[in-house]
Picture (cartoon, rainbow, N blue to C red):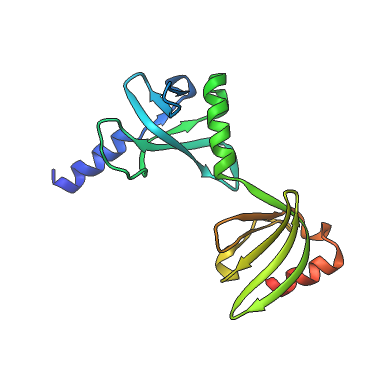
Amino acid sequence: MDKRQGGQEASSRDRRDRDPEEVRVWRGEDGRVYCTIADELTVLTPMFIRSHPLSDLERYLSIRGVEPKERSVAMGKEFGLLRNWLRLDPESRTIVEADLERRYLHSKVLAILSVRDYSGAQVCEFDTDRGLREVTLRDVRDNVVYLGGSRILITDAEGNRYDIEDVDDLDADSQTRLARIL
């Protein structure tokens, strides 16, 4: 067996599907969040990333972070795919939900108040459920996702997301301004 095959086997062996009963998420006395998996591995400062963030919010979460024995600051190592995470114990679920809320926070667009062009970028003013927002869009083709029906997700230059749940629900002026953006 060559090294590549061995590496592939090891990585697939390391990343397993995990059931909620195997995973415990908790806050230590130092205030940091930890995740213990199957009573055999503790992950420091875990990140929970939705495997299907647009289509299946509640089914699978990737558990990523750093093992205590590692000194790497890289947070990309995956330790498992958590199935049916809503069945976690109450403390774990509360911590995971707070992490997901921060990671996947997006504003709902209620109206598009203005659109201005500046050297290839568009600066828009959105009225959202979180108040007025000035949004800079550089390359609209890369930053607009059509989610089916008339739902659109827009990501601005800073990575903030803005959800237009139904284009048809926007007022006529907002729809006209949206057409300029798209």
